[in-house]
Length: 182
Image (cartoon, rainbow, N blue to C red):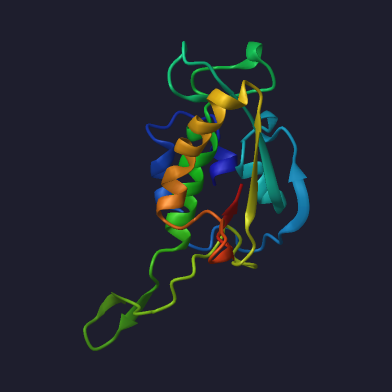
């Protein structure tokens, strides 16, 4: 649905994703492939997911004169205000994973209503229904000075980290897998 309607007038792409069923990637088998320069695809991120790619790449530039945002493109001449790490990757991934990780509803015939399924499972599922534990690799290639760009990248990833969608590592816990690995 998203790929076929890409580029058509829409008040909100988020509205389209909100109606997406929880099994939106049913039938897609994740394969060990990487979408190099993914932002060049017709529909960045979604084309790669539809092909089963378990890795996508975004080249990012930071320029404090332009605003505190990370622009996605192959070189400075290809940067556009609407092509940011947030708009092309962070926000869509948050929407997809939030939809994928909604508590399932069970029909209760005694109350003729759907009720949230009670579960103690705190593991987050990834973007692929056929392989929910597969982590999508988001390769972020810094194309501007690392000393100024890297802190902005960390700040941009914070929304994914706050809801436990990012793989983490610490000396005490070791590697903690999650739906997205950067």
